[in-house]
Image (tube, rainbow, N blue to C red):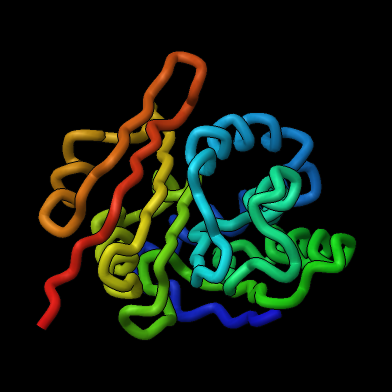
Length: 205
């Protein structure tokens, strides 16, 4: 398990509030939100293949995504390429680590305590990025998207979901459009999030 929180920088009071909120809810997060999150995974992951891919999960929380992928048999201990789960809450990551230990699934998985708006990775690393119900907690969504682009390879698949009540969809799409191909936007009455899927397109020099 890899842990190290980079400087949370500007608007640190808001970020500390988010850290406190999720640290205090980590023990009962799954019982409260697992069913809700899985309804989003069913839409996002129905055609996804993470075998042999380098995957980044932004705001990974307690690891519900990995747990769902294993249950749906979309990954196995031998087929997963490499997965990095990143979250700003240490307690959420500790719950994730405990889950990995129980599943005996530590290989090819790293957990990182860090800030989505200031990713501690070099450029062009990942070919799949998820952020499920996390961006609405950020101070600067624009920076988070730019950071996601920076650490992505060309044609990286991105899968974002954001709470409808906290999303300006038109503005979000305007940020994405200059360097992406948006493939799907899902918004139904029984879903609390808007789901946006597509590919990052980077100029090849």
